[in-house]
Length: 249
Length: 249
Image 1 (cartoon, one colour):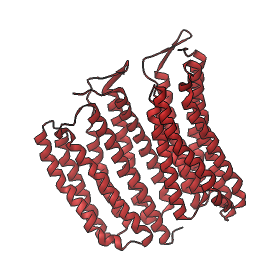
Image 2 (cartoon, chains in turn blue, green):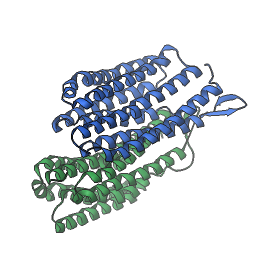
Image 3 (spheres, helix red, strand yellow):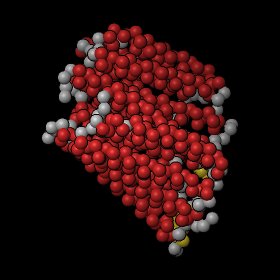
């Protein structure tokens, strides 16, 4: 297996540190932003901030695990013997992915019964998707990985379908000032999420070693920042525009 | 005794880290949520947040104890010689279990004398239940374990009886919008609590080794998350619906 170089090691290291800073800062932005929106949207912003806070916590653990799993000296990187625990990502997603869908539903402020029904459905599908991905992720056997990948793709496709078809009617009932932003939030979700099942397949098609590891770790980090902090900014803007449209100062 | 495998070790490790994230995030959710409910319900949310904060603290200690009690290298897990301190759970329950019952009573907003009487009675029974379970938990002798298990079951059954019979009259006097949620909260308490006396019995019926340890630790963690964070979300929703029904904006 191709070894990891010092500059690859450092790139991943810096990407993780960057993620901690972005997620931490985003958390404070969303929590402070609660006071600027109508009370109907505050729970959406609370959850948006919790998603980035939970991500900050996990990136701190991932960063520490990355640092512990290598020793760098004399321009060489060697495995320290401590295993890099990538599974923190699954622990994170199990919690944050349902919450991301719930914040989108909450900011739409649908009738209560519809909010409960959609949040329950999408939240459970998202948790199921992550749970089905985990046994594949921790397996080294390509065929086992493919089976769990395929199983996890079922809820994934159901979620994407629901975001497109199920929410379309609800989006057209949103105030004009927020409609474009809600549509963007939906697109950001779908596009950033597509990154994950693709990266999952890397080791099954022979991409291993330092370059693949670096691509996977930096790629996951960028996808997480877009899907959590970037998406959260859209949620904040939607909440602010809707509050304004509804006469909240 | 069947040894613990690396994947079992990691599953427990990740479950504990997940619990830290859930409990920490839930705490902030409840504390921020205080501003969204009428002042009569704020103490209930304060206590709800304290329960998850205390749990987050104890899961941090449990996580560290788990990590310290094993050494993982070369795909093998070995006992490090440091004992895994499971008793943190009892320290946690002694504090959080009475508080959980008190938050349910507070959110019902009963007449003051009834609140004091019920909170005192259920709080003391819950503390007694945990205290009676402890000498059994730290004993390796099955008959000693059975005696304390049976003694702890007495307050357990009295609490369940009181939640069902004693609170029924009070529930029917709640606003219609909150009645279903209060009934759910009562059920979540009873169902999630039933897990504990069952798990306690595992070592007495010969379930030991890696698989049993993993099942017990992951099971306790799931039960704690449902009984504390999940239950807390119901308390928040009850407080929000009742505030709304009472004209709080």
